[in-house]
Amino acid sequence: MGKIRINNMQFHTYNGVYPEEKKLGQRLEVDVELNYPIETKVHDDDLTTTIHYGHVYEDIENFVLTHPYNLIESLANNTLAMLTSKYPQATGIKLRIRKYAVPIAGVFDNVEIEVAGGDEQ
Picture 1 (cartoon, rainbow, N blue to C red):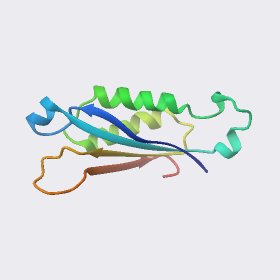
Picture 2: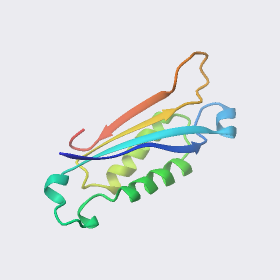
Picture 3: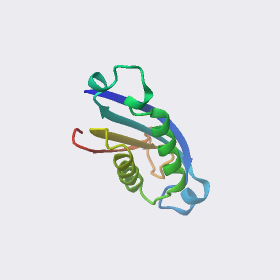
């Protein structure tokens, strides 16, 4: 099974529980992986036979920039639902969202949420 991946998309969003997160916002990174039978579907170098990853990027960008949530878990679940609805030809979709400016007293790189949907996860 082929996979189409877009890694480390970066967006400045206003997700979070605390007022300062909603006011100042923070950087989120998003990775997406779409399972698609490239080996059997793409033979003629025709863009219409594959999943247009430029459109996938634009759909994710538009969604995360216009749908603020308290929880990145909610953002992840709802972004995944949008993608599975919009790209039914993908046999599975995995989405990861990383949040860097997390109001936790501790030393770590980020908090990451991963969700998956579709027939093949």
